[in-house]
Image (cartoon, rainbow, N blue to C red; front, side):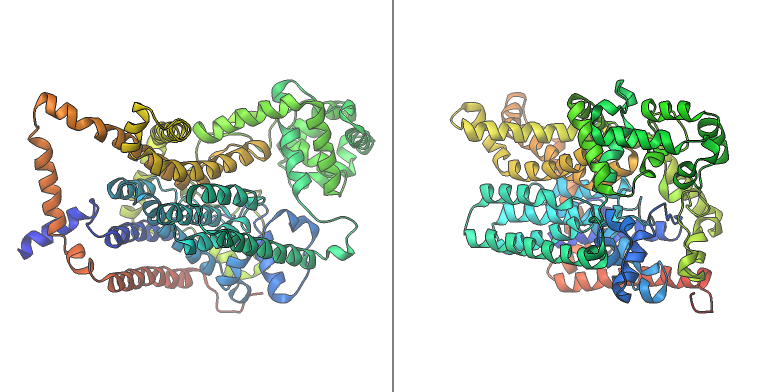
Length: 613
């Protein structure tokens, strides 16, 4: 019997257990192995603008003020920097461990989102989440991507649990998770009223709980606005610091050339003033222009010579108006310090060309959802192109032109950022890493294609459920109800609303590159999982009839018997199935041990003996 159990336990890692918490723990253990592997191999990235977040954390701790340029960011990641001890240690180890904990939990949250629909589907979608590498892609990327991915998935998981159980404590937990998500990414709070409305229509119940959650959200949001008012010293500012105008003007300007439009004085008085100032500040020649020097201080010499200095002031003016790109946008942004001014220019462009806004938004939304990897890239005038995919853990940010200097935080931080652990690993580890990277790049598009089909199935189920809600007394609707579509409709709608919101925000105000796609992958897998559950429900409603028509099949009972036998002799489930607290304790202990191992390795390789500057 013991021999059978020892043989069954490894096989059981690829099967859901009879106990839900044991199954979730299996995903956590597998996630720990992947997370630890990438902790010991992946390179750090500290891209342009990443310094805003630790600087915000330092300002909170020191009671200092922040410049208006940081107002485009949110407080969520700075708070995680504080939680990771950065203001005192000047080390990125703490924030990396927080991101690593998120990476371990993301597949578990995918599982918990789906488990009440189908434990089997939930387990395998959790495995797909791990194999997709989405929890680990931005593990060492110091932007809000990892935190945004985790908090949005946590909010959806808690909301779906509320749909299934009707327990209002889950609605309160959802509110807290939604607050964390809204503090992590700009405009993240806009979806909360929509999701609350879906919750009320689905569950109903006592209104005081909904009002209580809304009050918590409003009070927390108000407190955050007070914090921004103080830390950006708004009482002494001529205009409220913000990044809204910069971001909206970025997208409304960037795609003009793609659809045959130009930046024109006819768009409105603010646009005319902007262009008049541009023409004036490009004088007497482009090479001597203070505007160009101010706006593009670090651009590559070859780009400056070929696409900036090679032009007369009038030629460059015309190119900026008709051939938008990020460098020309930076020149325009150097003209006027007021963020509100650029918001007004963006509004004029939208009023003059409303169909253009729809054109580029819908094109970008399609790419964001089903065909990512398109952008207007830096240091060229190629426009909107397919950029291809990059395996972020396999590259290193140190030394890249657009990277913020980390030396301002001391030698310890600089040494950590410069250290690329993969280069010091044994050849076997490097070979495994390369094989993982190659497989990921090879099959990534098939993964997108398959999940897109499953998302389409989920949306079909939700749409069918909505029709049956409106017209319930039909034969087809009764069949769909038997297939469980009425239970899947609200979770699919809620998860899809958040996915579409995030992708639409990317489409309208940013670019549909792979980075923004990776941020939504766990949400996509949750929706795809419901798509699988919907298809299985439909098939199960007609399968018995087909079996009766063609006779019983001996293969299915055998497969079920093998699976049942493996589950029966699974040591983990046999012992921890009735010992949930012990299972959680050992999972935390193993995870802590792996993280401590990596922490000591980082200290040994990167920390200096002298105190940080």
